[in-house]
Every structure is written in structure tokens, then in C-alpha cells.
Amino acid sequence: MTKHQTPNTKHQIIFNLQLTKHANWFGSGSLKFGVWKFFGVWCLVFGVLPLRAAPPTFADVDSIFSAHCLDCHESKDPEANLVLESFESVMKGGEAGAAIVPGKSVESLLVRMIEGKVTKDGKTLVMPPGKRKKLSIDEIATIKSWIDDGAKPLANARPKELIVPKIEPRGTPRKAIDSLAFSATAKLIAVGKYGEVDLRSADDFKLVRKLTEHRGNVNAVLFSADGSQLFAAAGEP
Image (cartoon, rainbow, N blue to C red; front, top):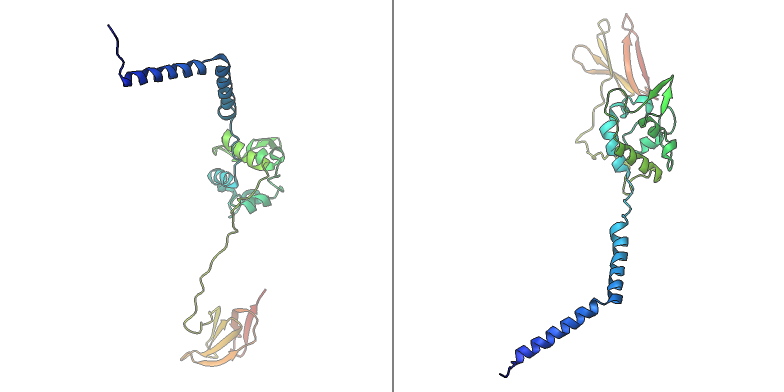
């Protein structure tokens, strides 16, 4: 019996032969070694060697200070005069001198304190003190890494600036009253203000006389017993 091949069957046989040829070629010893060699080098470079993590920034360190240190080291009554609220205050240090030595965490007093490596009068000093929660190993490592990297400020940090809106007064502002004195004998009221004293009638409070050329706020006024003299205390830095 004669076997007949349709055109599609013939093309399929040729395609299968070509696949077989390429498969054998790909599996040859030299090519197989080259492919696996390339794959091994790629894994070594991109899969095995770890990428170096970016060093921590002051933002990372500041969050640690905010969580553990501001109970004792905020700007209001800071312990040992060391304020840990900003980069500038941290680098300024306190009573014991500089708390940070850029590039040298092992020499930085702050690191030695949080690691409990400072002694005074035979006692070990550690921050935070007492029963407060101590910094974790990772938190200490973050601070040390930031210092060893140079203790740099934030790249986009801007100095804090108080923005005060400009408000134009609708009228002439009155001078505040800083002191008062009354004399029943003279029937006068002395009103001390900035740079001047008003003498006003005790009956209708009308202005009788204005005493000027005082320097600064008139913080105290006093009549003599007979009401014939007035003493005023004023001054400015």
C-alpha cells in the first residue's frame, strides 16, 4: 500500500526535524557549558551579592530621639543643657561638650551614653535613664551609622522660620498702661506709659498734664504724701 503525504504533513515533518536539530545543538557539550557559565555569573552578580543599603539620614535619627529622648532633652529645661530637638541643637552639644563627633561614633558621647559606657562616681550612666525603655540594637546601629557617615543634615533641610503676617492697624494704636498712682490730696491720677506719664483729673479723668522724655516703659509711679511730687521709674535695656 502506498502512503501518501499531504502538503501539510510534509511541512510538519520538516518543522519537527528542524526542532530536533536545534535541540541537539543546544544540548551539545560546549554550548551547554557556556550557557550554564553565563547563568552562574549572572546569579553571582545580581542574585548573590547584596546591594549596599543607603545610609540613614537625620530624619531616621530624629524619629528615634522623638520616641525616646525628648522627655529629658527638649528645649524647655533640658537635662545637662543638651537639646535633641533639631540637627543644630544636637550638634551644639551640652554641658559636657560635643555630643556627636562626625565620622567617629565610638568617640561620640551620645553613643557612649546610650550604650551604657559612661561611669560617674562609680555608677554607670545610660540614656534614657531609670526604668525608661532603652534603645534597641537596631536603633543604636542607626545612630552609629549616621554618625560614621559624617552626621550630615538633611539635604533639603531649611532653617525654621517664623512667618508673621503683616497686619496694618486701622487706627493709631494706643499706648499700653504700665503703671497707675492716685493722690487723694492732689486729686490726680498718674498713668504711666511708654516714654510718658499722663496726669489726669480724678474727677472726670481729663488730661491735666503730660510728662514726656522718659526712656522706655514707665513701670512705676508714686505720689508724695502731700501730692506735690510725683516719682516715676522707667528704663530700657
